[in-house]
Length: 343
Ligand code: G3H
Ligand code: 13P
Ligand code: NA
Ligand code: ZN
Image: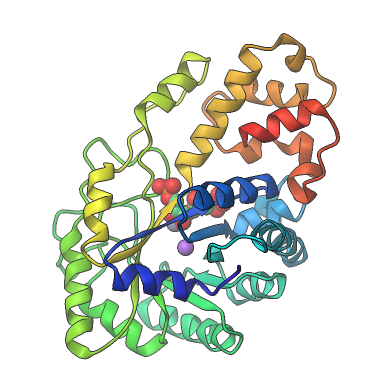
């Protein structure tokens, strides 16, 4: 059952936990994510990023995806989530991750997303407010949840509450919620996107606590989101590198800190990198033990891409030879089916 993301975050907030939100880039991944959540009888948040929509619209050079590509991708992934989620008894939200502008959000909503993020975090505060308000107006009229972002994730400093800090200022966060009526807010509190988060990244949970306390005091409602929250498991990185990969300086967020954050007002935890690493590991393992697959007419090209891009772990770099499956889910042969099991 597809629901607006707000319903899932509301349950998390009331019961003092954080809901995982997992990025997908292919229809077979949507199926896998739903299956795993069903196993745990948990609600599920699946998210497709702006670029992911471009990719799932069939653009192998997804960085240059047009609005039409994104619309097509949103339609594809939403149809898959509906297909796999219809008979499911868990609530499922499909969320646009890091929407760049109004058009990206409209493309996602028209495609069937039940939630969108508008990432105005690189804009000056007032412009971020204005853009986010515009998206909130459009989305809320259609029953769609909105996540905004305030603060810059990279470049972490020590002075948490200083005026020039890149961490989210709690008072600005309150003002942002009040002015935009956004449902959820991504904050900068020590996490970072990607596989190189630094050796001892510290979540400054006091930022989340301060925002939540102020909101409670003011009688306001709103949910907080932790981006850049992959744990980057050492053993997966080691397995990739043992198979010829070259992933260096890889460090994630300690899982115990994430669990703790869930009790400090964080209601959603975004994970993408860990999935990308696991997919890369899975494919390398499969090819390593099967010479016939390495020479397969349908997927041998994937093996060549893996060999050529040793430091990459974005599966979109590798799976372009099976775009038809990625886009529409139709699996033409046994070899492609085996690769899909990795994704
Ligand atoms: O936070 C960013 C996500 O990991 C999505 O990445 O824009 O490459 O799809 P992407
Ligand atoms: P990671 O790169 O840590 O997986 O973060 C993902 C994310 O924040 C998606 O929005
Ligand atoms: Na998001
Ligand atoms: Zn993010």
